[in-house]
Amino acid sequence: MTSPSDQRLLLVHAHPDDESIGNGATMARYAAEGRGVTLVTCTAGEQGEILVPDLEHLAAERDDALGPVRREELAAAMRELGVTDHRFLGGFGAYRDSGMKWHADGHAVAADVVHENAFWRADLTEAANHLVTVIREVRPQVLVTYDEFGGYGHPDHIQAHRVSMYAAQLAAVDSYRRDLGPAHEIAKIYWTAMSERKLREGLRMLRDSGDTTTFEGMDPDGPLPFSASPDEDLSAAVDAVDHLDAKMAAMKAHATQITTDGPFFALSNNVGAAAFGTEYYRLVKGAAGPLGPEGWETDLFAGL
Image (tube, rainbow, N blue to C red):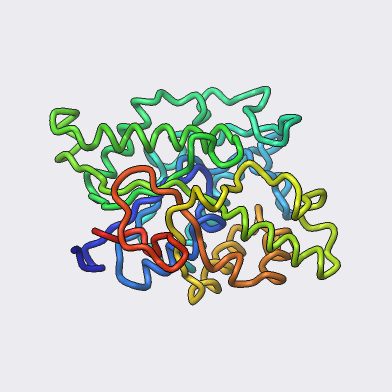
């Protein structure tokens, strides 16, 4: 068994704010426990929708200057979470946010126009090699990234999944690119997930409270977003309720993307720790460790 001080978690996300929304509580908990937490962000989110009127001129179609602002927002979010090791894949600006549009079926797809340097267009081996370098330096036991659909179809999320899974394989091959560092095999790989049951419960509480506009059109008893996973597919539930304040502060730090009167905070205000203080994962590589009362791991390092 490894001690907490020897345990290292690597997370790979597509844009600034993805990490705080999906894994902020887990990151804050593990950082507070003295475990190593490294975040790799693949783009600066240059195509993001800007929710601050005074900053709308930074949009890609105008000044195209959002990236540096989001880099600072991410740095502020990491301070809130207590995470000191954060990198951009290949260095800041190596890959650009690809943008997206909505498909009629309700999931994201690639935009009609994709920038030449967009992450969606990245050479898979080149991008994976950047991550191999990080893996072999940090030597994490656990990797967290998206599923093969990127949760909801965003091309950068899908690409982050592909790069992460390929890099994890390459990093473990002793004869592969020795110049990138000594080989390292990651013991456990998880995909981020959202509990279908918890999402339905949260929506039901919102509707019962009289809120009919947050996640408008989403029925607690009807079809859910593509990012919701049936509970039988989940492998781990990390309880980080004690670090919920840090997660919410990190989300607030992404001020151009998340507003305090937006759906995430509305859900949090109504459902609280039950919705945002526990984060869910699917184990896709490695053996599950001891299980908690609900039949899930309660620690991503369980069994290591």
